[in-house]
Image (tube, rainbow, N blue to C red; front, top):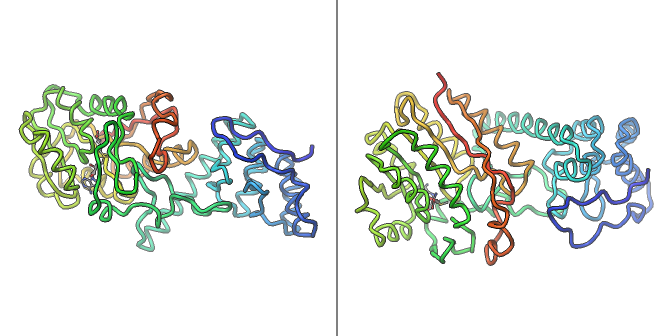
Length: 390
Ligand SMILES: C[S@@+](CC[C@H](N)C(=O)[O-])C[C@H]1O[C@@H](n2cnc3c(N)ncnc32)[C@H](O)[C@@H]1O
């Protein structure tokens, strides 16, 4: 079988179709690369193994940035994928259309097992990576909030928009101006801080944490106040809102949130309000949805609220967080859902992801008009429901 173009995943469009591989420049290295890409697309693990031994560069790619892993995933052959991954090509490599190998496994090979293999490989790799980072005292730089997605460890074809240098450090965001514009709250760089399409998701989150009558609830991050309005419908006996941005705080006061029943606003970063949170707790329900923070911050928050000595979440309490982890790539999202669950398990927390179907019409092109980049493109939202393990 000759290596023409594997079908591009259908849900995105590539601007230029990939040129055929035989247009590569002649020369030994190019020849080996071309053979490797072809053998990968054929799912010919024997030949792939041979070529790698002969010195074929596993980091090679075609003109559209498709690597041997993309081609192997398009073949659906797990053994071929394994050889390529073991040779050092990262699981999260993107082509120029920002497709992962997972996209090719699902859309071209239509192979769930090949896709799941990638998810498991990515998960194992991230755990090792995290352990190494923890041991060397580096905090994890996986972004968690709306503008961002997981950080690819290697980028072959184009620079990632998600590299830490392009992500928003929380402090910079908190010092910049934001604007309420109808159905959206945007920052000074036109990132969507919060958008109305999330309303149904927020409704589910509010319901999940308001699991008993007149609950005591804590919400971190007010944004457009969507979840807080939903929480008010459950007649909370105490409704604490932590918000750090001065413009959002002003908006809250302008809209008389401080006068709503049983609402208490803590103005400041949640990191600086921990003692007040402890004093007001324990809470029956807690929700977390900030902006410009990283997975390390989310994990920090989890360590605080699930600390037995702080007793912030009641023993029968329910915690949830906005699960935007890798929200524009199914593979990244699935891997980071597993990583988050793993970390929560180690804090003695049981996590279930409730699947919520996102109305794709609500996240069409128009939704993202004038927004720097879409931060959610998936049909299934995995709503975390976290409770203490017995
Ligand atoms: C995505 S919005 C929250 C949207 C909200 N869930 C809603 O339903 O409208 C994130 C909010 O978190 C706030 N925020 C960001 N960093 C914070 C921090 N460290 N502590 C408290 N609030 C923070 C932002 O200013 C913003 O208002």
